[in-house]
Structures are given as C-alpha cells and as structure tokens.
Amino acid sequence: MSDTVETPRTNFIRQIIEADLAAGKHARIVTRFPPEPNGYLHIGHAKSIVLNFGLAQTFGGTCNLRFDDTNPHKENVEFVDSIKADVRWLGFDWGDRVYFASDYFEQLYAFAIELIEKRLAYVCDLNAEETRSYRGTLTEPGRDSPYRDRTVEENLDLFKRMRAGEFPDGARTLRARIDMASPNINLRDPVLYRIKHGVVHHQTGSAWCLYPTYDYTHPISDALEGITHSLCTLEFEDHRPLYDWCVNNVSVPCKPRQIEFSRLNLEYTVMSKRRLTELVGERHVHGWDDPRMPTVAGLRRRGYTPGAIRDFCERVGVTKSDNLVEMALLESTIRDDLDATAPRRMAVLRPLKVVITNYPEGRTESIEARNHPKDETLGLRAVPFGRELYIDRTDFEEIPPKGFKRLIPGGEVRLRNAYVIRCEEVVKDADGEIVELRVSADLDTLGRNPEDRKVKGVIHWVSADHGVRAEVRLYDRLFRVAVPGAGGADFRTDINPDSLQILSDAVLEPALQGAEAGTRFQFEREGYFVVDTDSTPERPVFNLTVGLRDTWGKSRS
Ligand code: ATP
Ligand code: MG
Image 1 (tube, rainbow, N blue to C red):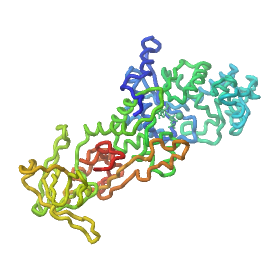
Image 2: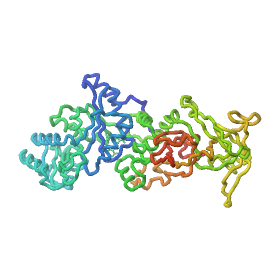
Image 3: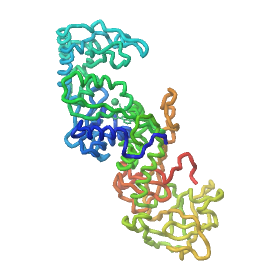
Image 4: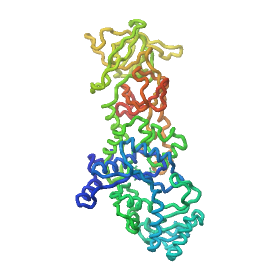
C-alpha cells in the first residue's frame, strides 16, 4: 500500500467544503460526476462517483450526473446506458438531474458570441499543424496568430458561417484571445470550437457541425448547473486558469471552484479508457464486463458488491499525491464483505471419485450443515451423503509432501460435516492415473471425534449421486506486472496469458442448483464464487471472485 492512505472519511476536499459552508459561501453544495460516454466506467470512476455523490450526501447537497459528450465519434448510447446502470448499481441516485453537455450547445454558442463581442475570441484560419507550431513550447513563448486581430464583425460573420457548415473540417477554429506568451500553455489562445462534418451525435444527431472543446464546455456546464465544487483529477490542475477564465468572462450565474485530487491507480491493471477499449476491441478479454476487467461491470460480474467497492474507495482516501494502490487492498475489501455475508457451500472443482466400501449401497443420508459458521441467522441446509462421493484431486497425495494434512494411502481425514474416512486402496487406470479411491468410514464419527486418535485434516466433498455438474471459471490477474507498459513498453506484452482457467467438470452440492446469476457463495476451502450470467438451469457457471486468503504469488498448500 502506498503511504498516502488516510483514515477514511475526512480529507482536504471535505475540509474545504466545511469551511465554505461555515463561511456562508454557499447555502448548499452541488457536485457532479461528469463521465464522457466513450467507454464503461472503471474503478477509478467509482472513486470519483463515491467522492462526488458521497459529499453531496454528507452535506445535504445534490450531485448531478452529467455526460461530457463533446467528442461524438467515440461516444454512443450503449456507453450512456451502461454508465447510468453502473452509477445506480453503486448505490447512488441523481434524481431527475441527468444532464448532457450537449444540452448546452445552444447556450455555449451564445457565450461564444459574447466572447467574440468582447474581443475575447476570434476565428483563426491556421490549420492544426500551424496552430501547434505557433503555440511555442514550455521554454519558448508562442506567436500571435495572423488572424488574432480580426474585427468583431468579421469574427461574428465567420463564426456564424462555421455553424452554417460553409467551411470544411479543420479550415477554421474559434479560439480564445488570452495570451500567447503565457507560461501556461493552456492559456495560449486555446481552441474553443472545431468543425466536424458528417458525425451523428448520439444526442443532437446532425444538428451541429461545430463542436465545443472540453476545456470550454466543462466550466460553463458546471456554472450553468450551479455546481459549487467541481472535483477533477490532478491532470487538470494546469487547466484551472482556463476554467476560471471561461466562467469569469461569460455571463454565467455562478463561479464554481475547481479542486483537483489524485487519480486512482491500481496494480496489475490498466485504467485508461483507451487501453480498456483496446483490450475489448482486440479481444484480449471477452467484453467490457469480462470479470478480469477493472470496470464496474466487470467487477460486478466477478462478484464484487457495491458496498465493497464503496468501502474500497473510502479506504484509498482522497489526496493530492500520486499513488499506486495494491490489488490486495481491493481483494481484502471484498473478502471481508463476503466472509460476513456469503452462505457456505461445498463444491468440488477437480473431482476424484471416492467409494466408501463399508457404507451400504443405495443408502442416502441427509446431513444438516450450517450455512455460516458465525452467523446463525443464515440457517441450516440439508446435504445428501452416500456411498460414492467426489473429493478434490488436490486433497489426496500418494506421496505426500511434508506437512500434508489431507488424505494419503492408509491415512485418515474428516469429511466436512460428515464422517472420518481412511484410504484403503488407490485405483489407477492403464496409464497410471488415479481414477478412484476406495475408503472405509468410521461410522461413529458423525458430529463427533474419534476417542482414541486425532484426525487433523478436514476436506470437502459432494455426493456423486446428487452432485450437479458445473463450469467454474478461475481468474488470475490480467497482467503479469504491477505497472503494465511501464517505461514505454506496449502494455499488451504484459498481459498474463493464464488469467482465465476453466474447470468444466466441477461438481456442486445440490443446494447450489438454480441459484440466480449474481448470487454469491463461499465454496468451502476454495474461495468466494458468484453465479455467472452465462449460467443455465442445465449448466451452472460460477466465477471465482477472490480466494479465501491472500495467496497470490504463493503456491497452494
Ligand atoms: P480515462 O483516462 O480512464 O479515459 P477520463 O478522465 O477520460 O478517464 P471521464 O469519463 O472523463 O474519463 O471521467 C469522468 C470523471 O471520472 C472525471 O471527473 C475524472 O476525473 C474521473 N476519473 C477518471 N479516472 C479516474 C481515476 N482513475 N481516479 C479517479 N477519478 C477518475
Ligand atoms: Mg476525460
């Protein structure tokens, strides 16, 4: 864990808001979560959601959901819908305050006219290449565009004709008239509008061929919505003077305050939407909701609960220092949640047949088992027991390593919730593969220990006659290294080729049959699992959410 984790709940943004409210600067706070609908939300967005909606809740204010949709060719309605579903699933409610920056296109245009009239904006005929070369560098000032001193009349005329579609893409832009010598490059006459023909915007259709830039749209959208505190990530710190310039130079009803915090970075994954889009598009994963993805949809399908994700966001805290959060923190958050809430079940992932030679053929016993070792309110269930069972292959060793406490030839082990058995015979096929164990049961050991000896190991099992066949998907980290693509390498070369392992003949105790997609369980001794959306009544599919303890990098013992 990085050294920047704070005690949950208090942070510098909260303190700013408390001070603003105490000083009477605002009667109520208004925040917003402003995603661009060009991908699914990821866990970094969750941090921003929890922060913005959480602050509004804490201080009795409101939080808007606003789609920052100024870049139509990468955006679409599928993304809009997925974002709404994910915010709702995380437990937040924007009421009737869902907005689109494109709702403000007409107003933004009118403010641009206002800027032109104040000689604070001009139509520039430099192309993209020329604009870049005029901009200067970090060490050299820029040069004024030759079009900078056009008259108000000429600018108004050209800008209106830009809107009317008279000029091709890239022929002209509208630029703010600020300062080409500013040490802050963002203030060197930034572009406010570009021409884009032929794109169909998911909200405004073909109504516009003129699109405002993010840097111009964002502050004005905030101001139009009466946002008091506009929270964004640190890379926008250098844009703040431009943010302030925009709200100070047009006739908006309020002046929101931009405050930056550090973005969430998580080990063993990538978070930029560009990279996530590539993972999906190039089929390195099976979609945006692939359980290996750091997306909210992926985490949901993986079995994460909204509460665990909110808790994780609280635990990482809000600071201004860059940090890389350990995957182990995310995993321990869901483990804590599921340890307390998930019913226990038995599932044999790699089945090995066991025949109890002294148990009557055809007999079935119903054994009562607790659904949770600590929480009695979760009740009991019946688990059928019979002469033929499955145990996990890894729970038997012919030549046991040191310290092995499970089943060995001639040795004893307890079947969880049932009897103590002794391995009498190992049956192999022609290739020498173990195909069956023949064992005897001590029939006096149901619910009590043998008196004359200690049996240390306990293993889980499923009745062969009653077991339900299932597919179980085990997931490992999507990347082999903590920071994929570090040092400029292609992040794809760091993909873990073994991040998905499919066990196709797992056997479940019958109480797991028919569980609905999204239902979570602990498979005893294995980990936490969730019913996948690919499940059918005939063939359940389970995803590994997280193991029982942090065993990553350590071998199974
Ligand atoms: P990405 O870089 O992943 O494409 P983005 O910032 O372009 O993300 P937006 O849709 O614009 O994505 O983000 C919506 C909000 O979520 C913004 O306020 C942004 O600052 C915030 N956000 C995005 N990524 C993170 C992150 N990793 N940690 C915290 N907040 C984030
Ligand atoms: Mg963005």
